[in-house]
Image 1 (cartoon, rainbow, N blue to C red):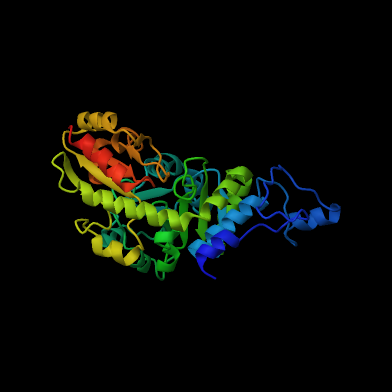
Image 2: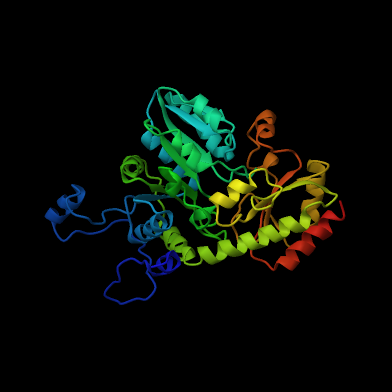
Length: 387
């Protein structure tokens, strides 16, 4: 059965009411038939729901669909994408362990690795993500974890996941890939050698800017370690949000095709505009890793970046001139969103760190939505022509 069909047809077990659409299980806890059943479920001798902080039918359905899409053995859902990232790191690593991470990560992920886990004696070395030799040189005897985004946020740098995976062969290293920008529709990192794949479900998995959520999928042994941490620290996904996200997955394939189609068309239309220093998009031939993008991804995704001449002053003017584009730190919505990373999502990084990953004062991230492409082209060109 094709994945698109499974994304629609995988559902929680139908109740005695014979509902066609899965109901919401808005309950904090579940009952047992008797004390012996409760004992057996707590002892994990038999399956069963206990408490919605541990599991819930709506959450289980969502996770099952995500594991199917990512070709994963197991998975776990979280209240946010950052909770998924933090729990994956904190649930597996211990004092004295070493992480090698790409320097092109979402700002909060960098804060976790430099300000939070560092307090627990977990060391992190940041490297140029697409320089495989840099990854190899950074490996120490106590290296336990590789972490990267591909494509990266916001610079759209790619990492050859299969090549990176070869570096951990014969070593006790876990490779975790943030697959938020690509989604499992564009690439499945586990098939390329990764051990864990992480998503902010708030983005494309939801797709309409409605709810927060996160998910990690991967090898069952690693998910079990993360599950223990999450069960006792409580970063659980609400049943309502899980219900929304599961419904959203039914259209993820169709949405990602359209996001990518619109993004490529917009990138091509804005290339060479006199107000724009550079346009970056994985499936533009001008992208420095175009060949890798074509090999590793099914489509180019829904994100492009524009480096606006004149820096923040011109970005501010552009944001005021755009008529149908939202100004927001989010992405993955049906509505096109413009973000200025240097002053928002990556503002806590030093100017030097931002420069190292290509975040200039004139860089804007455009999360291209599902509007008519003619309207988007007209809006951007009208605004850029006035700069």
